[in-house]
Length: 332
Ligand code: SF4
Ligand code: MG
View 1 (cartoon, protein in one colour):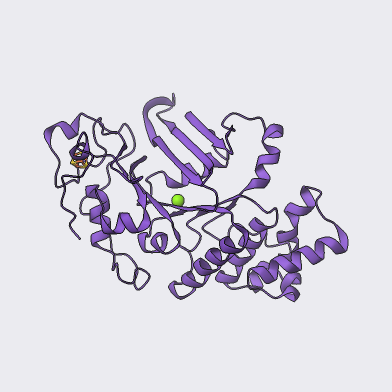
View 2: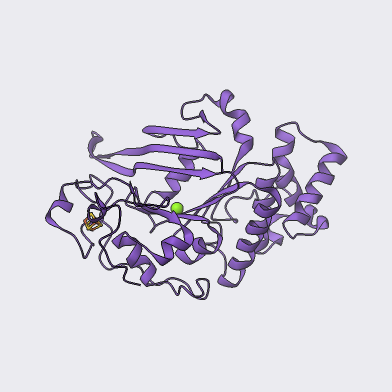
């Protein structure tokens, strides 16, 4: 299907400063050369441990942070450096749902005003028409229209996330970036919200870039999954293919800790032994080499490219280069 979002070699580096002179002592490689695409109507899951840069990718796509380099194309148009004014029409087509429904709702606005605000700001509806549209949005996310007059504190966490989702839907976006949308919710509520997101996509046909540290959650909603590690994507594949045939040692380790038959059955245990290296001045070579049980001498110096391994399956591991097929036996 058609490509909606295309991200090419995205980098976001921050200087680290220290001392009274605020001298730069290092560089955080928060996002370090990330490329992926999201097709129309598709959900791409982006999974990785906290601090791997996935939220920075999300915010860069939405132009909430300025990338250091790289390119973001929406519908074929390069939006990487568009001015605020030129970006305005695109703002409508890209919406975000944040992790924390408590922090992202203004406590002094009614739920109805929160959901209707984007429509009012863009001059798309007012008065009775606005009320009617907001009532419809409430019902679409499983809330009652008469709850429009309530304030955020009168809703549960799951209901608040439904308000955030209704607000994101208001402008009929083509892409909704979900940044850990259920991580702050009780496990019992998580599946309800995920299933709502799936239903809404079936009805409206928009795309999700769905970010989570929890592979089980990502597996439930995604068509394809990208695995991120220390600012880089190490593997991308169709969801079923990734679960059946993980090629990157990091993905294999992640999957080894997931109950595959019923991925939502329990929360993930801590994933891989050893610490994630600091993203400040990361060493050359494969970012995973300090924790990889297959690491070779050349992994310390050669950075593996994300290469095609067949059927849209891409993997960044020196063991895969030049073979077309993985030489690794999956551990699951
Ligand atoms: Fe492991 Fe080397 Fe592959 Fe990196 S490139 S995942 S260190 S085998
Ligand atoms: Mg985050």
